[in-house]
Length: 481
Image 1 (cartoon, rainbow, N blue to C red):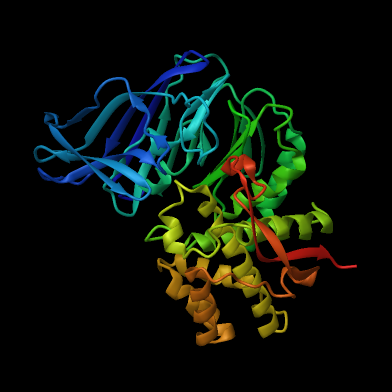
Image 2: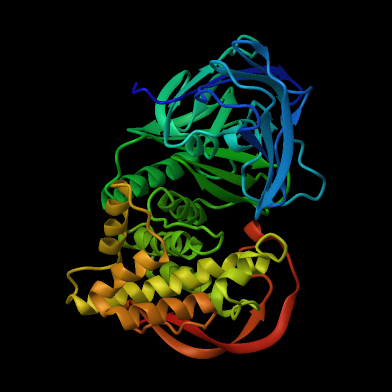
């Protein structure tokens, strides 16, 4: 290990209830001699308005080399996160040690899918993100992360798993990676090949072996395409206690929530696109500060590749590709908020769920057009893949890439004026017309009147709403004859 600040975690789950009644947490932080009045760390008390930090059994114990550390707390809300900051009541001496016990979340009655950050039990164990039971320490850059599991109060066969490994793990990662990654503990099933693994409790209502094979093939193809650095990747499954599903991707891991109800359970085929979308999130991204300024790129690339790659790999048919293109395009064209500027929509993401789909649809159509433009400009020698790799290479050298830098990448192919105009129109809410040669030129597209719907067919993710009767001009895709 290099001389990075310490972020050491010990987790001790206790059996009881459905699977786990509580979990003791110890965190040791190397904060480098913080002074009285300085912020030490914060808890994510509320994330995207619906995901709370785990309930603490009693107040957190905070100590250093001199004994108990007095602290003051203050709340701060930065859309979409409410933070509770802990400030030092005196100078800190040596390592800061936090000890506390958390309870897994009991989701409220009537709950539907939201980002799968919360720590939730099901029969056999529990899983969730570090975001809801670990502190965000004031540590810049990489830290020396050490995870230790104490499973002495758990049934035989219990395993503790984190994104980068099973059992006790050490890694050099950022605090962001520690919190925005998944953890699971319990008596789990798993299927692993090379550095890709799937973990679940009990049985699944879909063919898990076939799903695992598809996931592995997709991930290895994407890893090569995006010049992956070879870290492990883990998928965790969660049986929801409500009739819907969805997924959330974080650092080197992904959570799929599914319904066990036979009427709502996903099919193996539908999971191909869902897994593909979330796996893409390992790679293409740009800066998203302020919130909503860069998610069109992360979600747009995910939608583009989760549509195109399964078809290119022979996993889906041309008819299924056409359906996926239409579904993703309708996130924009049939959306009643389709004219809303990106930054205005970002303020409403977690109060008006229609706006959540705007970056998906806008990014999808915009990037499909960019792909076609680059192919045209280079005689087919380059495409969106090359642009994504350019961004990733620069980011891996430490460069921050935002909208301005992206425009510069595009300008190398289509010129500054066109690159800036098309990007500005997208961000300002201009409804984008698709190019006829987008999507590898495989489909026919024509302009047509469409109904603006509050629900854009993806009810598993965004919940039910009434259908509008309002009409607008959109685009319809069909398979070429």
